[in-house]
Image (cartoon, rainbow, N blue to C red; front, top):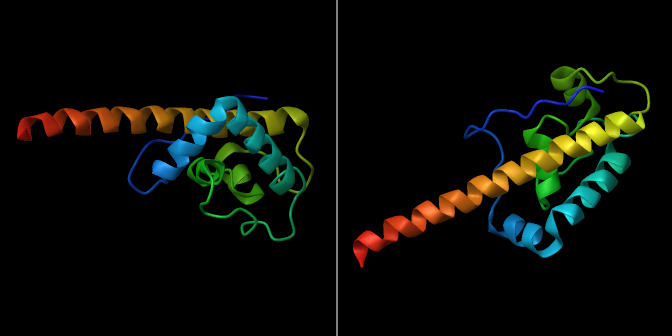
Length: 127
């Protein structure tokens, strides 16, 4: 399966917050990848009856990533990534979605850390 494309980074997309970053630091990227795999298996492997409503908007960085990457429902996957609806995802499709979500989290984590550094540098002017 082809590599799914990360979306652009704009203000309308979800961002990681302090709680998300704490969780990422606590469990590590491998732990986040496992959480993503479990969530994709549970919420997207089979075509859900409540498609479009099965993935919460927050509470975990994986959920935020799924929404930011247009991978929160089978409709989104079809519309944005041309993953067909109506049949069970293959193992390679599940792995592609997990990789997409994990890459988004890693990218946003790096942006978050860089923005924190910039904020700290700016504070030096006032001391």
